Length: 123
Image 1 (cartoon, helix red, strand yellow):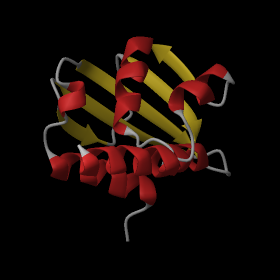
Image 2 (spheres, helix red, strand yellow):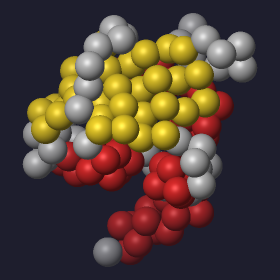
Image 3 (cartoon, one colour):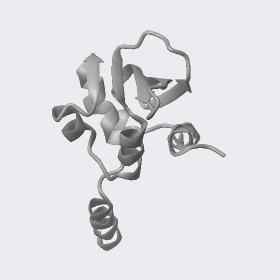
Image 4 (tube, one colour):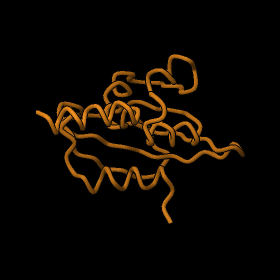
């Protein structure tokens, strides 16, 4: 059974093109630390909204290091990547602009998603 993180990355591939990242090119490495200090590596290559995802520990234009639990919160829309970076819960090295770009693929808070959905239904 896929974890929340694996499922998220699989869903990105399945969805195909992400228009919000249509002008973005680069590689983002996710170094995800669990409670035992073990690190899982994910490499996300973005090419104008298209994704390639793998798990090697390879060089990347931007490296995001965070606890797995925090990344799961990002995926669920319970946390904001930029806010977490500002308070030091996420450490970003390299091309920080890629962090700003990639955070667009994480859902917003549930209340914000409901407001967007209601606005789309009425418009």
